[in-house]
Length: 338
View 1: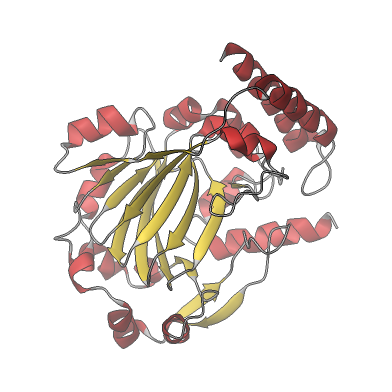
View 2: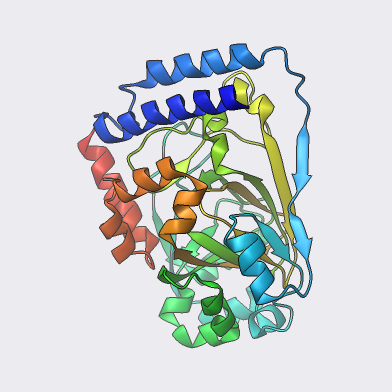
C-alpha cells in the first residue's frame, strides 16, 4: 500500500506540473513522465489478482442531521438517504408533463461536454425550448439532455418545492455557494465520468438514475486529461471498460447506487462519478464548496481547481448558476490554444 501511494504521489506531481506549465489543451508537456509512472505502477501490480470489485454505496433511512454530517459529509463518504425527500412538493408534483404544461416556453441550452463518442471536450451548444426537450425525450432522443437547467433561477419560487432550509443546514459552517442545478433527461441519457471540488446533495425528483462512483485517490487509474479547468473528466467508461487504453482501471473499486424518486445522494468533493438515466428523469443537485472538505479529499485536486485558468476559479464562481457562460469561456480558451 505504501508503495502504491508513492506511485500516486509522483503521478500527481507530474499532473500538477502539466496543469501549471503545459501549453496545449489538453496539456501533454509531461505526458511521457505520467505514462512512465503508470508503467511502473502496473509492473508492481502485475501479479495481483484483479476482480470486478463492486461495492454498493451506503443506504440509510431516517438518519439524523448530526450523523449525516459526522459520518458522511465530514469524512467525504457518499451515502444514499432513502425517501428523504418523498414528501417534498417537487417529488409529489414534478413530472415531464408538469414541466411541459407550465414552463414549455423556457429557453434551454443543450450541451454534452463529455460526449463519450469523441476524444476531446465537445463545445457545441444548442439553444431550444423546454417544450422541444420534453418532446424529444418522449420520442427516445437521448441526446436532448438538459444539464444545468436554470429553471430554479428563472422561476425562483420553485425553490420552495424543496426543503431548502434543510439543504442549507447541511452545508459546512464555512462554505461558499448555494447552487441548484437541474438535470432533465430521457431513458438512456447519461453524463460521462467526471468530478469537481464541490459537495453535492442530489435529489432524485422523478424517474430513476444509476451512479458509478470512485474515490479521489483513483486519479492514477483514470488518467484524466489536463485541461487547466476546475472540472476534471476521464474517458474511461465503467459501463463498457476499455482496459487496453486504461490498464490500471483493472484495479479500481467501483461504488454504485440507484436513486429512485425521493432519494437523496450525498456525493462528496472530487469523487469521480458517471450517471445514467434508467428512465425519464428529473434530478436536482445542491452544491457548495468547503475548502477543508476538498483538501481532505485531494490536495492536488483542490490546488488544481484553485489555480485553474480555464476558466479561473473566480470566473467559475461568479457564473456558478449559469454553466453555459463558463462553458463558452472554456471554448474560447480552447480556440486560442488551437
